[in-house]
Picture (cartoon, helix red, strand yellow):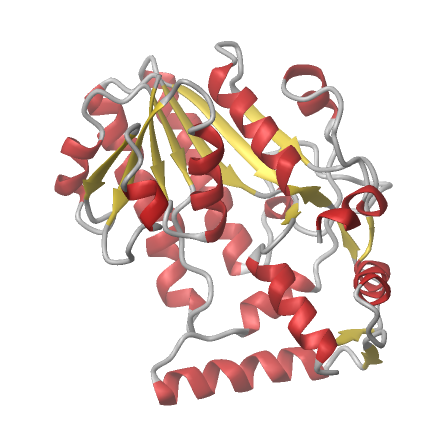
Amino acid sequence: MNILVTGASGDLGSRTARHLLLSSHQLFLLKHKTALPSDLVIHSDVTVREANLAEPLTLNHACDGIDCIVHLAGVLFAPRPEKFLPKTNIGYVKSMVEAARTAGVKKFILVSFPHVEGETTPQCPAVGRLDANPGVIHFRTRLEAERYVMTASETSSMIPVVFRAGIVYGENIKLMRAARWMLQHHLMAIWKTPTWVHLLALPDFLAALQAAIQNEHAHGIYQVCDDAPLLLQDFVDKLADHWKCYRPLRLPDWMFPMAGGLCETASLVLRTAAPLNRDIVRAGMTSCVADTSRMKRELLATLAYPSIDDGLRLL
């Protein structure tokens, strides 16, 4: 199978590419400005195709001869998300989908997250809806992209897959590296209001994604998370204990949106990336729990790491 991966320069994209190279697939990696990892570029089963998601005409060649597209490309850590997210989360996906349809691509997989349904809990989990109206810009724009993928397939033979992954953790994942550094330097704090999170170990993410690619019957929305959602506050305490650090302080909720706003303002003034912005903070403070029953039935019946207690050895 010829698979095109967008976002292969990034954390999850590069790991996805390396995992798929363990099988018999031919990989095509989309490149724009950011360099791809050197081990991928020199691999005999990898072809690099240069294109710009902001310029739809450049995507036609990128999709030639492709059987499946895995779309992971995106932008998150920048100021003014209300300005760039409609372009990167919706516009880029629309351009990629249209190029894929024109080229006759058989399957399009959009990697997303169950947070798009807004606030969810164990009593009221995300169930694969497309009619939610989340307040967080990142969630709202990604949900609009999901709708487009599903609708576009109705007038073509392309199979749509929305792969809603939980918060992925594993060895050297950027989010985990940042958490460890902050804990070791006594810089991490967490808000007091209990917030649910649904995690996913990297090996399970890769196994489920490969199943979504290879299973010819896979279609529609899959919510891919582990078996044990937990409170974010408990999660960061488990990380601190595992790395033998002090547990993070609990601070009033109002301090965190303020910190996001300050980071966003500083990044605008200095013209740098924003490690936090207001929308990222709102996203982090939104509880998320997903119903994974369809994933279990059709993609991955048994997880290698069903809970963070099992997965801590990866970190």
